Image (cartoon, rainbow, N blue to C red; front, side, top):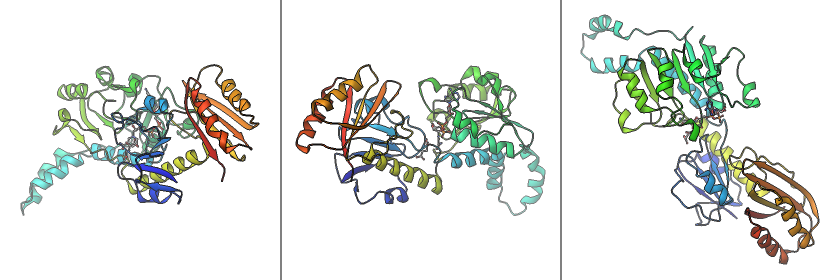
Length: 389
Ligand SMILES: NC(=O)C1=CN([C@@H]2O[C@H](COP(=O)(O)OP(=O)(O)OC[C@H]3O[C@@H](n4cnc5c(N)ncnc54)[C@H](O)[C@@H]3O)[C@@H](O)[C@H]2O)C=CC1
Ligand SMILES: O=C(O)CCC(=O)C(=O)O
């Protein structure tokens, strides 16, 4: 029986996706965590933990180095909530262009019976503009950014995108009318609206700071539905004060931007739709089951992709550092145990490598000795033995 520990509100459909070989929240020695936004940075990861699946995109709440050192694979669910974020950004673009927040607040304050004459006079304060023909800069053109860019084109906007690390797969999803910029400054220079859709990593902290805000034309509306810290809130406050920014919309509050007339903070609801939560939870559950049962890896954050059909009787999986001579050391241990290798595959991602070795015959008595011997190889993080049922 595999043990799963869940954090946060996980959609029931995801929990229901686990087969009867899985138990939820019953053990202190979980094989897997199924999480959303819980911050794991300050928690020790148990040695039993083989996989963390994040239902959603961002993994900045997962200590990736510690997980790798523990031999724990980390996955997210790419694209599962991208449409939810896209629809929210489109809603915000319309809210921003038509002053909807201020207009609704006005009406909430003027409830007198003979209000109609007054509103006919005052409504000019809420005159809006149309999105048609305006320019949107999209920083980050992955799952969310590409959908936002394409949808904005559909509204008749000019769209300019910036993403120096765009994958070939992601590039296929972007309409050819989206103009490519080679710097953030170029992307934002003529924009009326700027939206950012990048992961929170060391090199995206303050990605939009004082210099980038200074490159924007005055009265831009800025959206950050990626993560707090990617836009420099201090620079935003300065730009608002100086009249260089019209409004800042973000999903990530902090005290210094609370209750500001020109800042709208939502409570991290970008991916909060019933559909997105079901997508993320079911995708995460499937990822956990595939990894625990076959060792196969697709789209992990800290391991290379490695998919080998599991046709043999037994499979060893080894997470190890990406250093010379590892495969030879591993195969020597198998040879010393008298094992014939049926299939073998190895791949690396940055400093980490992953090896799958299938064997047909295995003496159960000596299998634990072999696992111990493999674990003793310096630079090995985790060895698993899987049995093909
Ligand atoms: N508010 C919310 O509830 C949600 C927030 N998010 C956030 O949005 C982020 C993006 O989500 P996805 O589009 O699904 O991820 P993704 O991984 O599909 O796309 C991210 C894109 O950002 C690009 N990128 C990375 N560094 C960059 C840089 N310095 N400049 C420009 N582009 C850069 C990458 O090349 C990639 O194409 C997530 O990492 C997460 O933090 C995602 C979903 C929901
Ligand atoms: O609603 C959630 O669990 C978080 C969505 C999100 O921020 C993400 O997918 O990165």
